[in-house]
Length: 165
Length: 303
Image 1 (cartoon, rainbow over the protein chains, first blue to last red):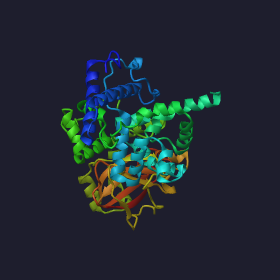
Image 2 (cartoon, chains in turn yellow, blue; image 1 turned 90 degrees about the horizontal axis):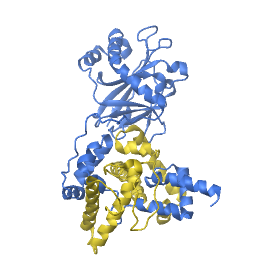
Image 3 (cartoon, rainbow over the protein chains, first blue to last red; image 1 turned 180 degrees about the horizontal axis):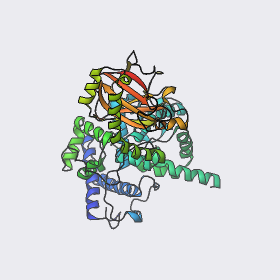
Image 4 (cartoon, each protein chain N blue to C red; image 1 turned 90 degrees about the vertical axis):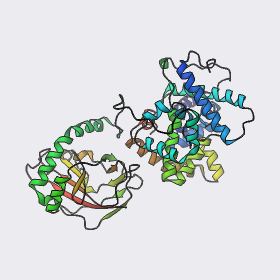
């Protein structure tokens, strides 16, 4: 982790390492891990990439996939910033949990999209027109947009800052 | 890459995060997916935003679990409730918290976090309005009490309502939100009101919870017809058996097309009255001067 992200504060390294270990633990409870060392390395890489994205904030641009050994450069203004929750992931979680409790069809669509990130793939699988699936999702999204305007808290704040609602 | 496609690519780069959160509007979704189809660079930037293989966005994010003590304390309102209810149901997440050395209990929110602000519809005027309204809340209670005491007939109720109002004149946690989109899912259209009369037939509104509250689309009579009319003051009150549960005073123009009533928890089943009282024209902000206010009642039946 320290090779991948130079000059990380100790606390941040600890938080990121814990995050990678939680994911490893999560995976180990769902399936038998064939090569845990390699998986741990992949997860550490991923956590570092995610950390840089989070430091860029909700309006930051996304990096293309980098070489496995490439050093990542955190944004200059983020020096000393501690690791925190991934707001994109928390946002997805909150949306899914809301739909799970209140709207089963939207929940199903949301799960598929957050896993695959492609409406055209989902449309193909469901044998629906691309525009039909997107229309259905837009109706679901209306509920979320309403929540984002009416609710307070870091998740909705993040969404508003990202100007995605 | 030509200038046109370069600017399309630049546009797409700015939308990727919103896309991955599932929140692009319909037209932009179609446009972005077309671009993604032809753009390996954008696809490669999007790839790291897919959940790690074998994990699902349905569970608490690993980053939240890893920084639980610090991060969970920041959760507020609905997001806090959703995390809490998920934890009650999900043994996996509780086990992961325990693995990370945390108890499956959300940390208390730090009081008065700097930088936090109430989430309201955007727009400078509305922002200022909220500050203005908060300033008026104290005065409102006194004015409303005076109105009810001086003009019991406006209530359209009985002396019992008056007594009840005086005895129970405290607000329970119910808030009103304004200037909403009248196309909100599940919104109830309020009928055109009869002046100063209780609506005879209760309006069935189903369950009213904190999650989505209850959105009411206002009839034309309750929508400000002109900026001048908008200067008038509107008092909205929620009552149960004549007892005031919540009240809000603000300018008529702030109502918009629809309002939402949001209780802190779940609104108890039963009948409620939603009362709108609009100051007469020519008496902006001066209760009791000139003509009496116009008062409408709606009877709501909550499941």
